[in-house]
Length: 276
Image 1 (cartoon, rainbow, N blue to C red):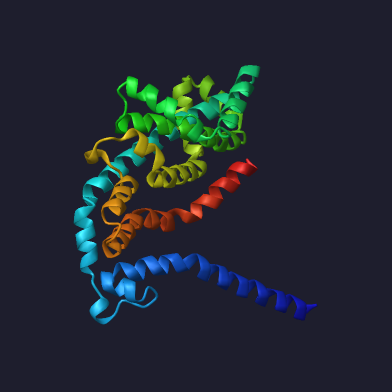
Image 2 (cartoon, helix red, strand yellow):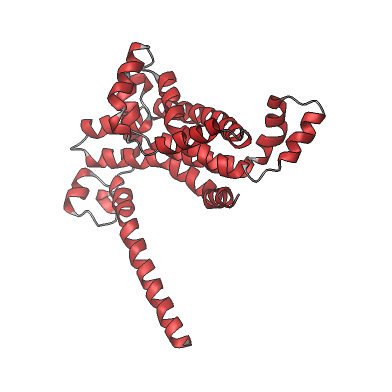
């Protein structure tokens, strides 16, 4: 029995190593070739960037051509404010849906749940048409749209967490003279910290990496986010793979860094929300 378990562990380890190699291979190709000259990429894609083929100037040139600082600040502004607004509205909505025991609250919750089944592509053209008539084809309108598309999942996560918060805490606060806003701000919202971290992470990674919605909404170069800038950058430098790959690496650095810092909170928060 022990030999079978030992053999199965070896098989699992080998499979895990093979899968890791498969998933990491694209990152290896992008990273190594981003340091090569154009000639070095064409001669040998797999080779490490040594000797005459090593060219770190790719990053300096890509940084300038991407207008990286401006693009980074645009992405940061849209991501941070969209996430904050989603957290505020979703947490308050989930709290009221849990505490209000009516048929309307049940209907609204299932309405938010069913909204996740609607493909974005089926509503994007009418949505952009309406936002254009309202004069909201700009970062502010984009933040407003992210609130609409990101609220469903966030409300579901908050809804499962709020259920386990004892209602007696709110009743005691009401007796002490707290208003509903005070109860939410000083009692409920601090208890939602674990799931708020998870909601923040999921929305930050989604909004930061999103390309389709900014492409439809943002029509001025000075408002371009990093994914949108990379799209036009690849179009402009499609034949300069050395610059294009270097631009791709520096565009991935912020979100990869963010992910490694907060990855431990993702599964923890989702698990707590499902148990609650």
